[in-house]
Length: 308
Image (tube, rainbow, N blue to C red):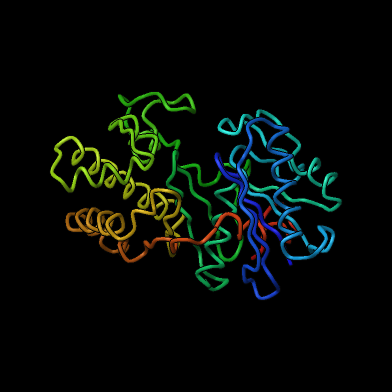
């Protein structure tokens, strides 16, 4: 069995997959804040997972970790994981020492891209972008069966492409980035809500006729469609798979993005030739894409371009 762990801002999700790539065990624990708490919580999740399956940790074939932040996958270091309170942490080496086996670390969106690629059963010669829509916006790229990080590990960071020179300052320091208009954070800024599911609350208010909600929803959907267009025009992937928290909106989100893409195609023969609406789909709900992807990442030998 191979283990994958997705370290999120509030919960840490650990899964074990068998030789047929089926999830055979899962443990979810709260994510602590700060470097030591992240190490302790992750080690605890793997240990609990082993206990639930009646095996020793050493009995696992491999362990892979998906975590937000800037990742040095060779050294197993994570930095600038602000939501976790981690500035710089040798997560891979520390967990390897705790668990007694090598642990590979990958960016969580990249891990989710790998998980989605396997979940959808895509052929090895297929290219896919996983568009993660959560508090922020980023993409993971699987090109012809390989995870592509780019020369410095920033491939897919399209959320930090400036799209509005008069827009708000982004967390990256630039102004008007795509993430500031196409993410959960963008919704929270433009349409404050006390709901624990603010994007869902926005769509409900828009459906009820709230003019402000309608405007924010329209902007959100149009800019998500713009993210799809960026991914196809820059990488020409076969498929863009939308995941992350916002994807839980389901069909209304997919329909809205498709309507925008079809509207653009109606006035642009070039965009019409790209069949953008037919190249977009949602990740199936209830699938732990990042955790499953981390399990695959943990078993790969190359740290540069991971053959799937």
